[in-house]
Length: 112
Length: 112
Image 1 (cartoon, rainbow over the protein chains, first blue to last red):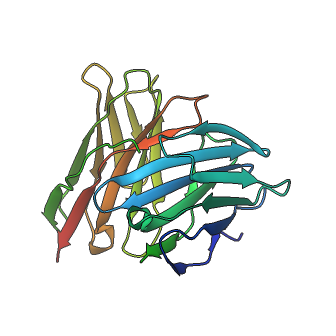
Image 2: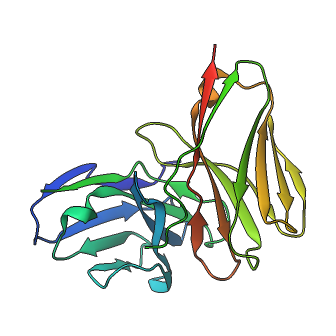
């Protein structure tokens, strides 16, 4: 059974640009959550999607957005990148959203 | 974003000893708790979970204890092995909120 796949693994962007990250959940999982991980702030919840609907979101500015497609694949977008957006972005999938979650390896975003 | 702490406590144990990792959670309304293990370069990996109607749950070599009175969670690892060296995160959620808040993490070093 394939795990959670995140693409790309590494990304370097310039301040002011925008970026789109992709997450393919485990087959059959309909819940996808996104997290930002930094050394200073730890793992912080961004948002959760289930059946193409955002069910909750964390305290991040509107520059951070996401969506989920009918096949449960999810994307997150960050617009007008800032240096502080440099982080490891992780997605996790689960069957319903409050059961065991499986994480991908993450996308390492560096903003220069 | 929500900040659950800036410090990363470190626990160093001898191979074969038992490890106890502690976590204080923040929301008395949380009713679902999870422990994750994160190795370098990888996403967090689910270890064990517990719901608020229980105070103890055992897995293979791991036990989670929940004390709702003082909002405390602990992870006990029996016969710690070098492969257990990683950062361990506790996480809390309220079933139906679809939002998971992670603790700051504890780094476990296992000395051979």
